[in-house]
Length: 471
Image (cartoon, rainbow, N blue to C red; front, side):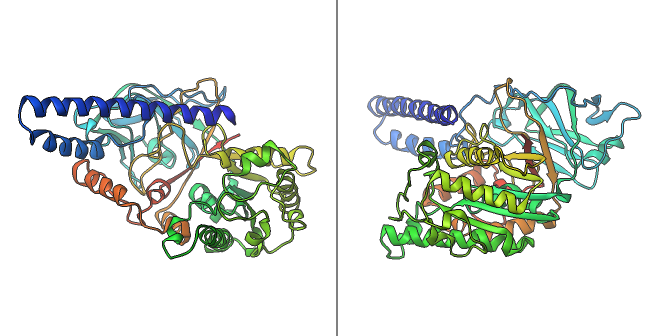
């Protein structure tokens, strides 16, 4: 866990240092222009520089877009032979792919000069499911397209691949990953906070034969929206926690999950690392002035070991998870991927599940990891709502990753968007600066806002794919 956290912190530190240096150089240049030319010119240049920054240089990208992604897939993964011929992606004769196969295509993507100002993207066409997948502006390196859902048109030889604001170079390499249909198994989704299950896996759990949603924390901190209503910090934090606890129980009902299979454990946001460090020591809320989890468990349909004393301890969290695992007996557990997702509560959520499973009489057959946050690209998945999800940046070739992708129909995507819209934490307006930035990007950089909501997660999560990693 410490390595993941330190990497994110180092990236942020380097980004902020470079930004301060750039700002200092810019100020010195503006002063020089004012002295050597005229006093008002620096003001005009400063405004133009700010507009350019917000439109084209404000993405939190902590690596060079010229860096190659470095993926390692499991040995003996099938690699059907493909070639690009006149813009069509063609399989060798006789190769037929099944519709539910997860398909990943490696290509070199090189931005045109316009691709430094508009998002480069690869467009897939030729069948009933046209797609587009976006990459970093100025991209010039190895990237991994997600062709899941395109197996039929690819097998027919009708899949066309075209770069927009970019060129496609080199020989394509295709990987094919076969998985069972996890929707036909008992699924348990582990959500560190209310909305994590919906962001990552609404399409999966809404189609599962049987699904459980287990939310670990109340997500009660950062309650500024409620303080604006006249509450003090403690009142606002408690109200936010109660609302998100309700969301974690109520929203999965939209997907058909019974209330009896939705559980809120009520531990406190961003306190899981401290709990893990001292397993028997209660760790109270940062903002709600609480050291008892039971306020946020009041909507639960069943009693759990942690209800006896309400103590926010790691030991209680493990006991709660073991009780739920034995009751639900999930065949598939969906949980955060600790090496891809750097959020401290997400890392601890995976650690808690793995620790709870040790020595337990019931063991799942499959663990699927997800990433709702990334270390080095805050905009991923790049591109618009309803588009596909290309594979995220990965630069550790020693890490072996096995993707599993579920394709979602447009109706399923819209149901997912409505589920996210019910989440109280995604409803408040974005800060004025962020709205101004998005307006400039829409006007100058051609970026579209999501039709489903203002929060950035509507753009990121309402996609034609849900992407997981088999652990």
